[in-house]
Image (cartoon, rainbow, N blue to C red):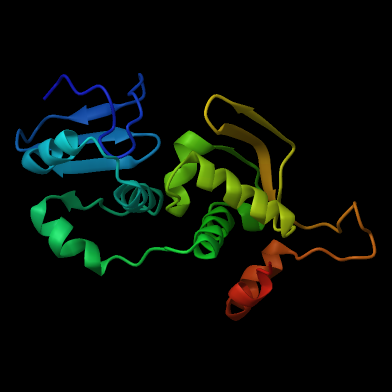
Length: 199
């Protein structure tokens, strides 16, 4: 299976960053920036390949395991039927937005760290279905004054790169009379997460 040219979960073409582990011939095992580490049994890989469909849920599970320093699951028939049911993951749009905020917070956002996010690479972080949903999540969070970024560039098919993304600690400069939601403090009161994400 050394002729694999793209990620089975996202459909993205591999580049020089991909790393394969070929120690087990029954498993396709690789590490790639958008999904972290993927381990998939060969028969399941062939099923996915023949269906020609990507799987954003599995991409999200693998990427989040990688980001959290956890072992990614072995994706096989048993996992698809039983194991996946043990995972809790966001399904609604707002839940995905909250998940992305939590990720940024725990990865250094609480210390005002800046992040560069790229929708084709990072949409699995919040279990978004694709680039477009990730971009809409970012727009929503900005509209809610929960994140800000220095610049954004869009090209191709909804491929957007966000530069210097930060959790907010500022008053809304467009309307100084309205104090923005402070996303750092927002996490200290997690019971209000859903209530404070307003329409």
